[in-house]
Length: 152
Image (cartoon, rainbow, N blue to C red):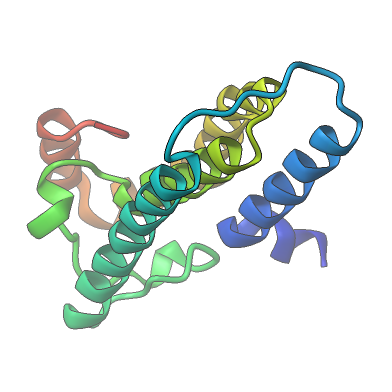
């Protein structure tokens, strides 16, 4: 069960979202609000959903695994489309989900979750995925890594 949690990024995002609402319920820090807060939150969330959907679609189109639990089953190194801009657009999309949630809730304390998210995603998902891709694709992956940033 623990392995599933650590290998499914959407569960990590769900835990972060729950934690953001929990932090807000304690009113530990100052809340904020601004004009069009809900609308901007929705736009940021939509952008994140789009990134995740485009990334997933690209993987499916090339008939390779989208499952972070089995990076060794990758059949092709995805370098086209959105993956020309970032090696991990889906994790950026999840980050956008968290940003949308933080903006919607309007509690400044929730912004402390972002560095933790980046740290955990790098450690639990990206580094193991990159190690598997390095073994599978060797110099092709190294060349791709040198051209395209991990996050941007």
